[in-house]
Picture 1 (cartoon, protein in one colour):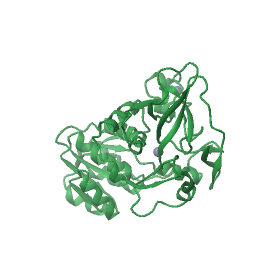
Picture 2 (cartoon, rainbow, N blue to C red):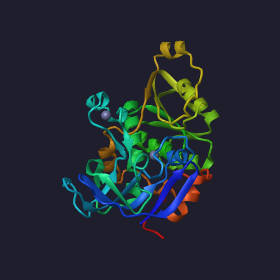
Picture 3 (cartoon, protein in one colour):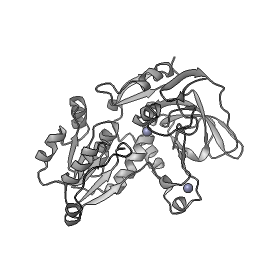
Length: 333
Ligand SMILES: [Zn+2]
Ligand SMILES: [Zn+2]
């Protein structure tokens, strides 16, 4: 089978591999669609730890082709989406119901072979059913959506609230839709790219602004700010944009080691609630259900569809202007 492997920092191979098999407790999945994530580019550059060599791809859906010994919840022919994050189930965080903080967390497409391949073997417990009639390109959104749902849970948006979303990539644009579904009546999206601002307005944002213009459209601040840019300056801005008693959810991944000045007195006396949303603890099933429901506009987020052969060049390059989500169809040649 064909696969795209990270063999060293900055080194990607489009290569032939033996098809994996479904070991005990595993299912073998024929990958129908996989999403290219910003983290994949960080992994290529060595900015995020991975196994080497490894087949990347942690956002994917596909069809169960074989069921290993001891696995039996799924059947051959089922369409599934994989939760890539595998927790140990036994460490203090896992026993506390917080698998995203597992001491022994490992991930498909990061520390073991993932979905940038024609086939992948995964533990059956990581798989969540999708409808037979679903567009597989939509199924590939389940993983980023599951991470967004964790942030949304922490944001605790109630109907009628105002929300600012900083960052207009695929995450920010999903958050716009989720904030509206949660009942927010004011949703401001902040991003530098005009095409993304235009897209946000079609997805329910009430305002889409350049970062330096956001404060002007919500002069009294907002109930909830979700930082999806992963930029230190945006982190600082998110605190400033929260109204008194407001909530700031940190979602974007800032470079490790980056710091910003904060004023504890301001956070204290305005009682700003700072919350961090990391990964997708126990939210993947809900994400699969939401994708299956068709409640989200996903097609407008897909800006390119490619085969595996074109993936290495795409991964090695910076995101193109206007790029939101690239979907890989491993079955395409
Ligand atoms: Zn990702
Ligand atoms: Zn654990």
